[in-house]
Length: 369
Image 1 (cartoon, helix red, strand yellow):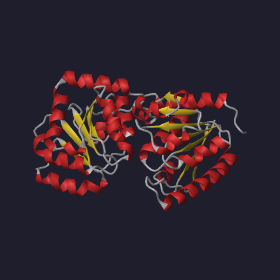
Image 2 (image 1 turned 180 degrees about the vertical axis):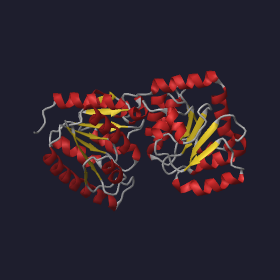
Image 3 (image 1 turned 90 degrees about the vertical axis):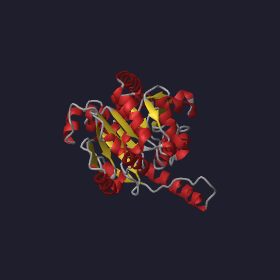
Image 4 (image 1 turned 90 degrees about the horizontal axis):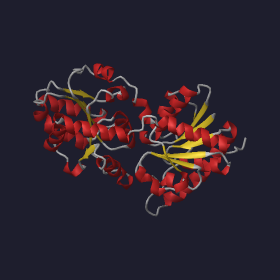
């Protein structure tokens, strides 16, 4: 198959596309891929690292209020559609898949106008504007949360999960722990606020340092590069608890995750896909700064099934955090219940599921080639 992938802006839209690309190459090494993104987005750095051919178009998102900038956005969209058509005619793909973000708007729309089969993949429980718009023009809409189904035409929805889940499922947690020089026998809590860190999570953990030093389990605390020096300085003031490992970033996250007993994190779609694929109980602190408050909806979906505890950022503090950590890790029944609930929500074969949908669609739809 020849496949065009498009998605951008944030890691949440890019990583699923890259995970899917890896799985496709594993199944069919002869498959040809092309990724269409923007030069300004994170995809322009991440995609070439994976040795996937990359082309760019220029596009921006709509402002939510009346603005002159929106007129420019419409013009950029039309220009983006024109360039996308040119790229698609040259590459002649069997199928196009958009994983969200503004950039996939012109690309997927152009595919529909050229009668090329197309799919959009929605990672969150509340869809973004781009995917809602594109759902009118594609053959299938792949979702990760059942809650998202109601936003799309019923006959187009397929429940595949997030391809990123498949990247963590066979990882060696023992090696992950060794890479951070952790005690292999101790229960371990991973606390992470995303690639850039999250200050409220950092502050709550700093508040809790005097308490966590007394626990018989260990902590891996990922600060984000921006906050690392400040946090390190604060930790020294608390006597450097021996059961706390502090790092700015983890490059082998799937491997490390596989060795964790509990995760404290934001409620982004990628994080949720990974922890449920492994069946890890979680304490989720949704970011209130995202569109449509979708992270809280993501988190509540896990909470309603008993797989997670949700703490809103405004309620977050050190003692509350430790209280929940203690309750989950010291009560074997509670941990097992949450582990089972998390595992039931997981889709560890998500990339395969999405690939099967793509394959069926490309066979059943005549392309313009």
